[in-house]
Length: 263
Ligand SMILES: Cc1cc2nc3c(=O)[nH]c(=O)nc-3n(C[C@H](O)[C@H](O)[C@H](O)COP(=O)(O)OP(=O)(O)OC[C@H]3O[C@@H](n4cnc5c(N)ncnc54)[C@H](O)[C@@H]3O)c2cc1C
Image (cartoon, rainbow, N blue to C red; front, side, top):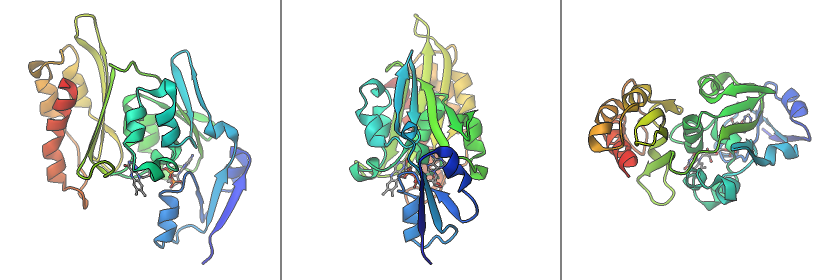
């Protein structure tokens, strides 16, 4: 079976070509690998070359990153230092030069580290010309038929956003678990709002709502975080794969969550 590639200069034209047997091509690190490994569910790859897809814009504290922007570009951007460590945690240099922000939203666990951080940052996904909150987007991504054009989020202050990717093979193994937190604090160091996103605790990034609630009104001390640490895995169904079992992931999650908060 031959595999075709259709290239369009606009997202609209590319979207119109996404019929049966067609798959959108971002950086191709997963799509092309799938084709190489014998995935015959598609026979045409569709891409859009619209320059908008490759733009990074930062204005008034809000970042808009085009879906075709690679992890390497995010990591190198001077105004995205707060999330550069997340981009640097995706694969090795060759993968980061190809892997896109848009593709990461669709990457199944244990992949999707960048999407975990976007969930913590409460990003908005622009897909099919509509703005969709990231949580709703991730919930519905299996049925997605649109092209993601960009993601938008408020650039976090470096001390408000934390991220850890736990992997067994350094420096570029896939996640045992990844954790991203966004914490608002008052002048006394009390947490006034918390968003926590987890990777590998389901087939896609999920929020840890019980732990978010347990952190509000607390400080970042061992006592202050104890309730949140106790419920961080509540309701989660961790992944079992070649990297780790669900049991192992559930065991180490509270340990790494606690370390991240107390670091
Ligand atoms: C060796 C290796 C190591 C890896 N390590 C990591 C890792 O550490 N962390 C991690 O998170 N990921 C990892 N990945 C997975 C992958 O590289 C990344 O998740 C990457 O960001 C996927 O983006 P892509 O552009 O390559 O996606 P593609 O392969 O192009 O596409 C993936 C899926 O997303 C869809 N898609 C892509 N872009 C869009 C868009 N704009 N609109 C709509 N649909 C779209 C495609 O149709 C496809 O279904 C690794 C992959 C490999 C092969």
